[in-house]
Length: 87
Image (cartoon, rainbow, N blue to C red; front, side, top):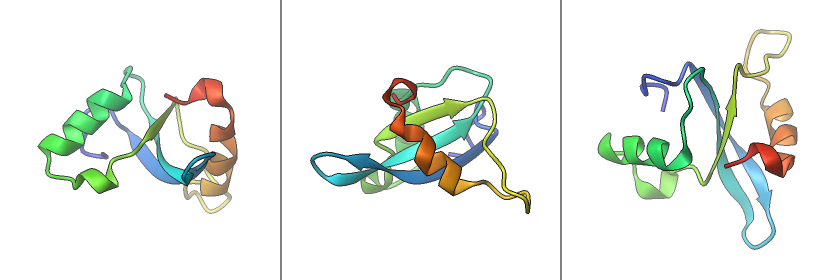
């Protein structure tokens, strides 16, 4: 995903799902609109296995960072609970 020209940064986190327990959410930092189908098509063309495709997409202007400057995955896991942000 990080090789996609529109993606500045990415982190994948699990999000709750009532039927399966969890689904994979790709959280991306971008200034360019990007949809989940566009991202999946890009990943498919670049040889990623379908079982590794994200099932949700959260587009943000920047990803939250922790004190050490690394992506704060805990903050991202808490954020996708807001259904209006997910695609």
